Length: 437
Image (cartoon, rainbow, N blue to C red):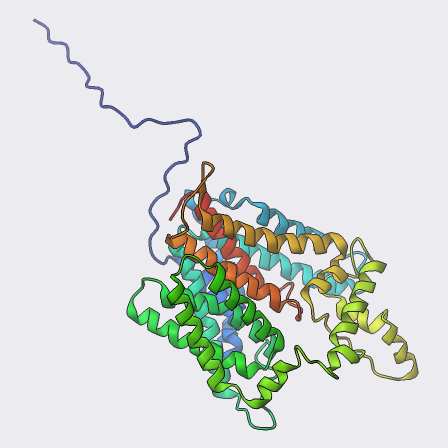
């Protein structure tokens, strides 16, 4: 008798058309993330300026190039660039494109072209960072580097720049000036608070707490009114809108920062801050080189060049060549080729109205994507924002607010500070959309 072998059909998991394949579990640090960390440390934290011995290695260029190369060589599904598609990505690409279109008609085409190439490099790294993060934990790692290198910068500043009664505030530092550094500090503070209050190892929480205190001291020593205003707005947002951290913890963290501010602020500092509400004879209101007059001239440049502007990074050129003050040069009077002192006026003047719209849309879309990630919308319903992803999303929202307020008084439109925050926003939004937590 012949026995017919019967094949046992083992039930297979059901597959549905359009189902998203489950990503491989995220691991720890890998070479790509290490290169990204070194790039952020160099581009944002300026470690090669703090420690000149590192400059010979060109850490930003080297790490950025290696990061791009490693990304192109990897084959992970979680890291596919297609997953970064978003309104924020479109706005960033649009800004890069419009910056290129501003070059032919720029006042100084060489300056505009150089600025465009630098923006291309910055945008490329931003996309690589966003695509490379595999989970919320990876975004945390980038955020920790951002916070950590800001603290290192603060330590070096406190150690090397001594103040006295006559020189009570910081001035020109390494790469940044005191006002730029104050905005960097304010964007890093929410990240520090996140690591203090997150469920992490005690040593990480203690280090983050010490770092927050150091940043508060540096904020005072900067003497920056714009930085102080940005801090107040961020503090209000954290108290009222960061619902993923218990109210008592939020209040305790802010009380600590305020205590450090009160203990270290001098009478000169508070006198300087009082000019915010009582400007009197503030040069920003009265001088031709003050912010109000500079902003007005910037809007005039935009009106005269509404489509493509005067060219990327050409605001100082406009000040020295086509502004009303430029006529003074004909009489032998020196004219300052100054900055816009406002990122929004800067972009409007340099890239025209379309460039301004793209820049504002970039900031807004990044902020909105973080808000959606915090709410974790799925199938039309909204989960309570209590998980790790939501906490980090609201933390980055606070950092964006700090930048947006600080940018009202500084020319920061093309800085790595901004585009690193944008990269973290795109990366975290990606993890929320693909549910990679």
